[in-house]
Amino acid sequence: MPAAEVAIEVEGLTKSFSGKVVVKNLSMRVMKGQIYGFLGPNGSGKTTTLRMLCGLLTPDSGKGTALGYDIRTNSDAIKRRVGYMTQRFSLYQDLSIRENLEFVARVYGLDAPEQRAREAITRLGLNGREEQLAGELSGGWKQRLALGACILPQPSLLLLDEPTAGVDPKARREFWAEIHKLAAEGMTVLVSTHYMDEAERCHEIAYIAYGTLLAQGTIQEVIAQSRLVTYTVSGPDVAELAEKLAKAPGVDMVAPFGASLHVAGRDEEALEAAIAPYGREPKWTWVRTPPSLEDVFIDLMSASKDNFQ
Image 1: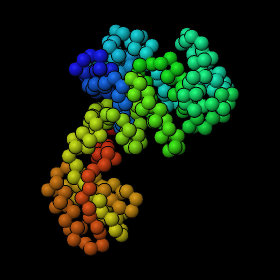
Image 2: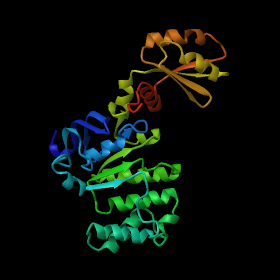
Image 3: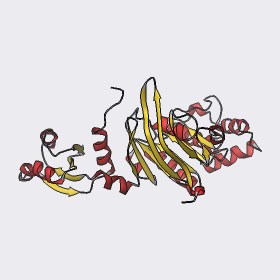
Image 4: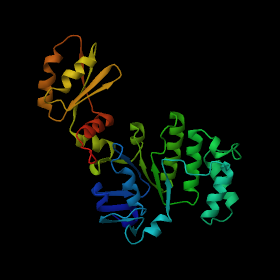
C-alpha cells in the first residue's frame, strides 16, 4: 500500500500515568481522508490515544508515523498540521464569532485573517451571527464555531474529542455532514464518540476498553468479529424475564430496548438451550435478529475490566 495513502500507522503504543496503564500495546492504521471513530467507556484511553497519534503526547513505548512524520521525533511537524477540538469549548467567551476566528487566523499567521474568518463563517452557516458573543451561543452554534477555528489553518488531520456531547440531533447531523465534506476533500478525521449513530457514520471504528483495543474495522467487520447470536423478545413482564436470563449460562448479554429485550450469546448452542424454556411461553415472541453495533459494544463493555479499580 503506498505510503502516501496512509495518514497514521502505529504499532505497540503504550502509555501510563501514575503507574496505571492507560493505553496498552495499541496498533492501528488510518488512511488519508478516512473518518476513524474511537468508542469505549469513559476513562478507557480514547483521549490519550488521540493525543499520542498526533504528537501531542509521547508514548512510553511503541512506534509509528502520522502524516509521514515519526510520532516520537517529529511531533512538532505533526502538531502544525493538526486541528484539535477538545471536549470543552476553548475559545474566548467575551469575543464575537468574527473576533474569535480572526484571532485564530492571526495566531496561525494566516494571510488576510479577516477574509479567512469570513470564509469560515460562510462555510459553517454562521452568517448573520458574526457579531454574537461566543459565550451567548447555544451548544450547537458553539460547536460550529469551534470546528471553524480548528479548520481555519487547513490542517491535514482533525481530532474531535466527543465533539457533539450535549448537542441536539439536528445540530449533530449538520455537524457530521460537514465532517464528511472535509474528509471528501482529503482531511483525515479521528473522532471519539459515545453515540452509536455517529459511530455508524465513520468509515472505520475502534473499540477501546480500559487501555486495550478490543475491536477495529468497518461496522460490518466489528459486528462479524463479535460472533454474537442475538434474539429480540417482546411481550409482558420483560423486566422480570431479563433478570432470569441474565443469570442463565450461555446468555452473555441482556439489554432492554424500548418494550423488548435483546438477548445475545457467543455460543449459539448454549444460548439456544438457555432460552428454550422461555421460548415455549406463548406470551413472549422471540425473533432472531442480526446483532446491532450497540449490542456488540454492550457485550464488549460487560466483558471489560476497569484497570483503575
